[in-house]
Image (cartoon, rainbow, N blue to C red; front, side):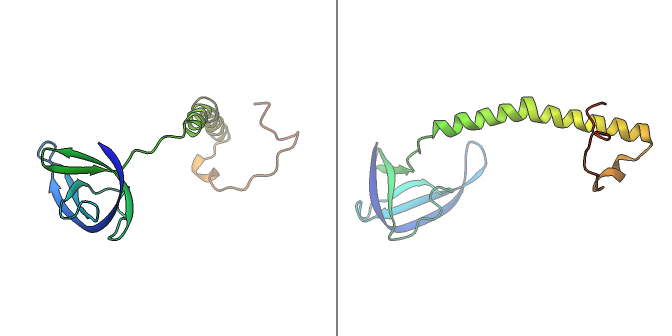
Length: 138
């Protein structure tokens, strides 16, 4: 396998159905300046949907028997984003969402005590909180 930059001279997409799963997919064939009349075979997908003739693209080429297969190089993950996303998910899962659920239960309980249908509360304008009407004493 080698990663190479090639110039696309022709693209041919062919709809197919997987023999193993029965799911449809699109096979993508490329002719390139660098490989002449030898077709490179791969899959059409979001990472190569914007390609057009004349584009220079970076691909991974693998020779299998007399065939040339291509794929799009995998992008390295930015671990700082992954760690940040995991941290945010934990904050939401273990802090924010339980507070929202608890708040919803309090609102439902108060509405039930006051004899108000919870559907009537949605969209209602509320007065600003002050010491006499804050919810901390519940």
